[in-house]
Length: 241
Ligand SMILES: *Cc1c(COP(=O)(O)O)cnc(C)c1O
Image (cartoon, rainbow, N blue to C red; front, top):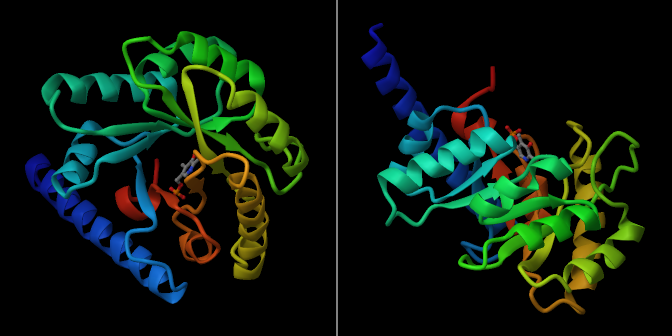
């Protein structure tokens, strides 16, 4: 195949995948007796080229998730330059080192991975006054594995309290990455814990409207347990190299 044909084939694949993922979300919403459109789709484009993102945009996708600061910022700048009018929304979903907060605060619209006050304070301080507040989620670790990032369920309330005071951040809810498991029962258990925590915090935080949980392998369980935003990479863009 020529390079051109190869690109055309990939484009077709991405648009078909995107359609299938939208259908899967809709079916999961129906099964859970949730209104159509109650789950937002975040397309996770990390490691994928600009061309793949363009294809998704052509299919109507507007929310994109990135894990790596430099790569994400380059993509954001590129799309702001070529189509400043296009309302794309960029979510930072990866681990955050404190020396990398500035470009995140300056370029992204959302951050899902707030797991300590210091990071939140830096992001608030570095958010330019000319832009709207950074929309943030607290990352919660329900699996209690030492290696995973995120606060424990017990710590979440205090961090929400602190983050909600920061001037240039708007606290929108919670995010979680449960440990990878194929077992639907285990998937549902982890999501249920997060969902319970979200519902109880929501009483104190009226700005809470986002529960970010569910990836390619576990989106059905996540939607069933009340996710309002699934973060889907592989099922849209294919496996990452
Ligand atoms: C990579 C990534 C995803 C997407 O995972 P897939 O399994 O490819 O859908 C979602 N959330 C986070 C935080 C990720 O790092």
